[in-house]
Length: 472
Image (cartoon, rainbow, N blue to C red; front, side, top):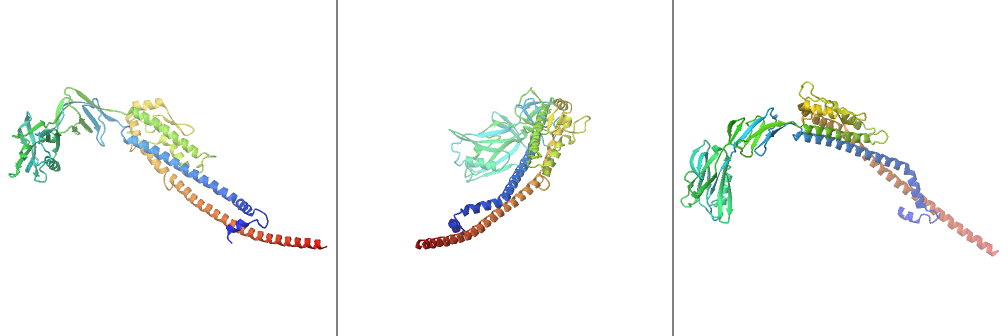
């Protein structure tokens, strides 16, 4: 007979609900142990959750501050008084100019652009032979090249045969050479034109001569240069001409990185007679904002820490890693930063007006911050430098306090192991309770059978006694 079948017949002899009795006895036997295990499980869950909050808080704080510092928002940047004429940017590793420069854009650089006459079908064969691109200096009048002096570069030969003799095929063949001349097709209702555009610079004008195959003529209509009659030069090759502090200079490109040290100039348009001032601007407003944001975020993190480490209610009140994080962050306003060594220059957050309250939170002395920004803007800027300033120090603190062995990560790993062990204990307790339930069920089943037998004997004797009494 199985335990299940026994349970269904329990109490038939004694009249007692033995199933309920067994359940009550087993539950009572394991109540204290189960309650203890459950409380421990809730504590571990709260500790792991608290550690996760602190890790996300410190890493998020550090990542956000480093991202802002790396973006350039907190460093002095070059400026242009008229970006529509000249755009300016700082080259990698360079420092902004200490003085201003007047720049006049008299001419922007452009590349030679030539186009063919209309061709009815862009997919039909044009001709076969060899196209040769040669760079040099040219003169143009009324869309025709009147003079050309080849430069010192090697010409590019482009073979056109039956596989690529259409206008589309010729454009693809020219582009495949990567010579610097790009080819495209411009179509309208009347047909298509081959458009050739060269690189910017006066010395990078080009001729495209044609050596036709006798058996497949027609390619000559695409020739560009002296004597060409079926193509037109719409734009001539020119250098950029700028005057820096009144001194004219020429460059082949509109992107100039060797005129003002450390700066890249992007010429957008010509404006003869208009001076554009190139200078630099300190990020005073951005530095004030990041200081305020730093204090606000730090206070949020410290409030979270206070909640998790509260002596009576905090899940991490006895966690050494959380306590170490609290101590480490408390000293951040006094961390020394090399800001250049100028006399009186601030080297700590405390020196620019970031003060510590009694509860560990921070506040800003607005007057002290304004004074530091006005008198030592470069030092305050270096205080928030991505690689050497507070962002780097906070990143180091974050790495230390979240260490997977000695920091929050180590505590989290320890609590996770304890949680796994607790799960094993809970499973073992369940097995012990089930074993006890089975054993007690079998014991009470045996007792119930004996009671049933006793009751049967009692009934028989009562019947016999009643029969004897009746005979008398």
